[in-house]
Image (cartoon, rainbow, N blue to C red; front, side, top):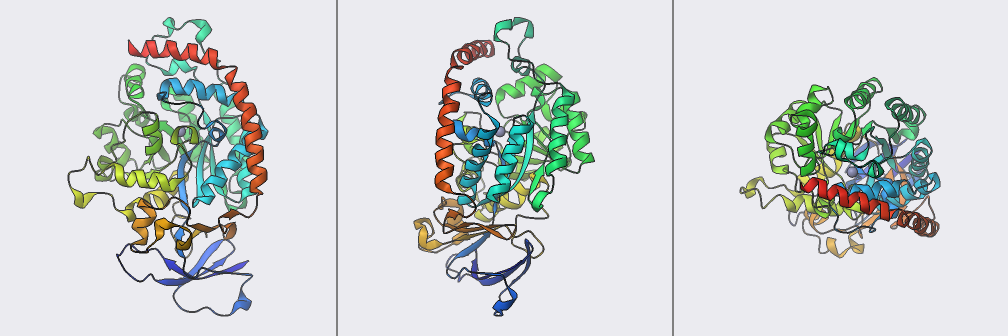
Length: 476
Ligand SMILES: [Zn+2]
C-alpha cells in the first residue's frame, strides 16, 4: 500500500513565516520520504491525499489514561483522590466486558478526533475486559498499549493507617494473588503484543503502595524479559508521600530504586510530590515522568514540579488521565495547561516552556512511555505514519495564521482536526471516524453507561461509609 500525502504545510513557530510545503510518501505504514520536490506520478500510489492549505503534525501521544472511566465521567465532584478512589473501584465492579469494548471505543474516538493517535491505557480489569478494550483499539484503528492495572493489597492497606483500627465490615475485598495478576498480563501480552504493528502490552502495577514488593519486582523482571514498559502511578498525592514513609521508612522513589524498579522502562505517572533527590535519582536512571495537569487540578492533588524536572534533565511526557478525573481525553487541552501552568513558578521567562517543547512533551516524550519513541512522535522518514492534518478553515483558533505552532498549543481545541492517519491508514476524515459508525457508538455508550451508573448507585451507601471513615482516619 503506497500513499502520497501532498501539498501539506509543516507547522512552524516563526511569526509570519510562509509555511513550508511538503509531500510525504507513505509505504506499508511507514513514512518513506518527506520532500519539497514534486511527486507527480499518480500511478505509483494506491491513495493520494491532497492537504493543500492544511497543516501536518505528528499524531499526539497520550502517555496515561484509563479507558474504563469514560462511562463514569462526571459522576463525582470535588472529592480528593483517596476518597474518590473508593467510588472508582465500585464503578469498576459494575462493568461487563462488552462495556469495556464501548468504553475504550468512546475514548479512542475522542482521542482520534482531537489529534491523538496513540495511548497508554492503564486498565484495571480481568482478561475478558482487557481483551474487549484491545479489540476496540483494533477496530477503530488506533495505536495503543494496554498496561493491565494491578495491585495485591486491600484498599486500607494502601493508606498510612494502623490496619488493626480498620473495622472488618469496611475492608475492601482481597485482590487476586501475585501469580494470577501476572498470568493475566502475560496471557494478554502473548496474544496481542505487536499485533498490526499497532497494539502492545506493558506491565502496570497500580502504585507502589498498592502492591507488594514481590508484585512490583515480578512486573519489572517480566517487562525486561518481554522487552516492554513498566508503568505506575507514583506520588500523585501528599497522602502517598506520607504513605511511603509509613510503609518503607524512606521516600517512594528511593524505595523503587532499591527494589530494582527504576530504570529506562519506568514511567512515573503524576509525580507531583517527588523531592529534588528523588527527581535526580529518576533522571539518573533514565525514567520518564508523565504529567497529568488536568487530573491533578480536578482532584486537588497538587502541581507537579515540572520546572525542576526539566532543569534536572528528566523527560516529561503528558497524559490526560481518565476522563472521570481529567475531564476529557483531549490532549490539546492538556498541552495548553502544561504550557501555561509552570510559568508563574519560574522567575526566568527565558526558560519558560515553549510551544515547540510542549508539542515534544505530547509526542516524542509521551511515546517513550510505551518505548515507542524511536517509531513514532515525529514526522520523519523511517517512522510509522501517524499523521494529523489540521484544516485552519475549520478552526477559529487557527485564524488568522500567524504562528501555527503557538496557536496549536495555546489556542486550538480540536475543531481543526480534519484527517488522521495511523500506520498510514485514514481513521478520521473530514473530522469523522472512518472505521466506526459514530451514531451507533454514542447510542451504545449512552445506553450502557446508564446501566453502569444504575448499578453503581446501589453501591454508594457502602462507598460513602468507607469514604467517611477514611477521611476521619487520614485527618488524625
Ligand atoms: Zn491514572
